Length: 44
Image (cartoon, rainbow, N blue to C red):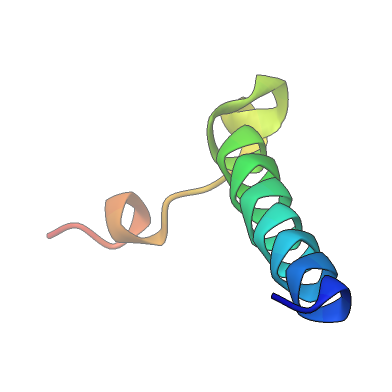
């Protein structure tokens, strides 16, 4: 396998993984108490 293809695959994989971890941190981390739930606000 070519070195540039390996580097690109590793870089893209790390980027997607870090984006996923950051999204989970934003959703469930310390600041999650301040998030609003639009479905709870408009319950009948």
